[in-house]
Image (tube, rainbow, N blue to C red; front, top):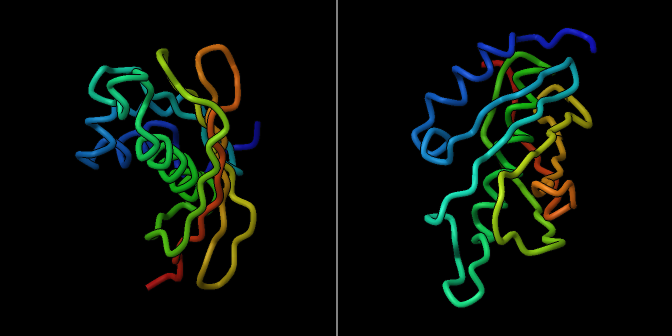
Length: 138
């Protein structure tokens, strides 16, 4: 696996400085020059439908954003704000940790596009998405 621009520890440190990411319990488990892998533990606070006991879709969208966004650190060594994002929901999540993979698709002079997939603890695809980030050097 080719080396990322920032180390796994540096990417985790950046991630953990975000109060939301820390609240989600995001753990960066792998990094390469093209992206990252993260894990997010299941917690009852993440339920969006009390009748169905399924995870809130906003949490899945956030996991897409976190995985895709952290892939920028691994691929280009800096982050940027999302300027567009799309999330597709494929399956309800009722329990278990999530695993997500974020990968940079294209880096330009001012914007970078990335994608992410989210799997449940059984390895089934539960969400996927793409995002565009403003990454011009300032």
